[in-house]
Length: 143
Image (tube, rainbow, N blue to C red; front, side, top):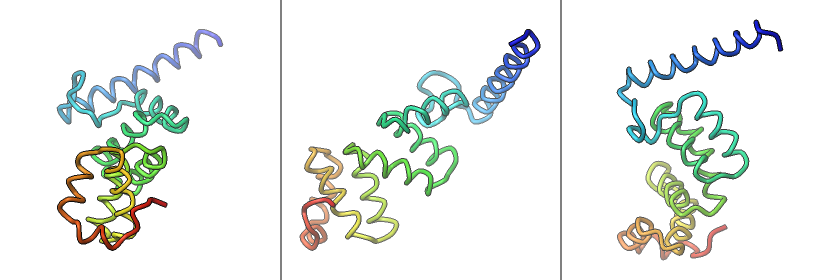
């Protein structure tokens, strides 16, 4: 690489950084820990790469990014389903609750919530406690 290519690469990187900082200032999300769901360009690609390798924390970051910043429920559910397949209780419960609350599909949602409860995930246990009649109608084993 010659000097022109290096300068071009640095310039493009700086433009992305300025854009991301400007976006963060506009939405009021500047500072470490100020927003769990905001990902700048570099964080997004880092999380995307790690998520595709099966890193649960990166998958959760992408799930929140698509839910709260992009408002893309279909993409959010794609990452949530991948996380649930890896056995994360938070993702199992969230995906199950989505099926139950927004699709009224207890057949898909109940086994996921039950699996999260079996992993001692308190919100899932409370959900089952408040809807025992619904859970008695479905198999207690997940698919």
